[in-house]
Image (tube, rainbow, N blue to C red; front, side, top):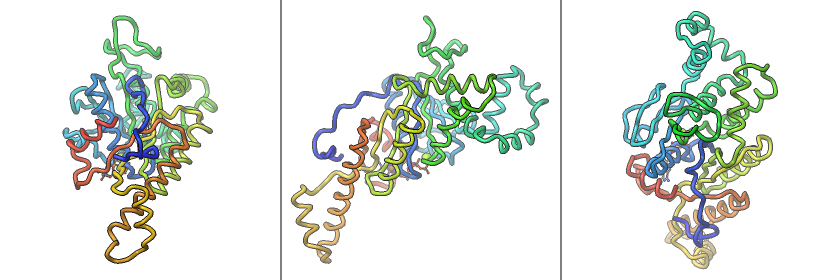
Length: 322
Ligand SMILES: Nc1ncnc2c1ncn2[C@@H]1O[C@H](COP(=O)(O)OP(=O)(O)OP(=O)(O)O)[C@@H](O)[C@H]1O
Ligand SMILES: [Mg+2]
């Protein structure tokens, strides 16, 4: 683990994310979003929370991380206290339609699949909303089978899922998806779609119940992208950022003085590995410093030195930092 800057020195204690009903994970492609979704789900589930992880029509890698069987477009129980689903837009819209019309036959009669697909392409945002709206819907489900958009379950009942974690798409698409309910509020005519968007947005905006988790690596490009992402989430969208997760952090082996000495010696062959390492540590510290300026509560996950960073055992190790 990093030890100062914030890495050199004890990182500040973090308030847990356990009370959040809705967590939306995003960040640059390949930085570890699904890894963090898996580790966070494991951490919360171990603390007794009932968790649903929703993937967004993704190449499914979560089951490998959780050691479960493959996760498809139906909600599946994958580990103690953890259910998961890989959301597929066409199927989400169908579910939504059935929910509205209260009948599968009626839905099928009204919406032939081909029509639905064309409809999707024609209505901007519907593709994203079908998934985000579904994930939100699961925050309203009660153990009794009823639903409520109150922020607390009624007396004597409880949440079916205490936390819904969305393993969101990478930065650009991740933002597009978050933008949709806000746009729907502005453009959709009043009706059930708009009402749901309003209820969802109300939840997403509330920092005590909902938050975005940004994942990044302690490197140049991901750091810059994360800063832009944070600006858009806080500015344009005005949504709460619950956590920044800096993934795959290397424990420094050099003190700052040693690092300077190694780097000053320049690139001489005998020192090549040390030089590379010192450079990496310098880049990492730079990233920490820039990211700290965001003022977001930050968790640091260690670099897992193995081919098996996606194995269930590695996920359990990472869960300890979340
Ligand atoms: N802490 C870590 N240490 C080492 N390797 C890691 C770590 N976290 C993730 N990885 C590796 O990085 C790769 C990308 O991880 P992951 O699939 O979680 O990223 P992602 O952001 O979900 O990617 P995508 O944008 O494609 O969905 C995987 O091979 C994973 O094993
Ligand atoms: Mg992923």
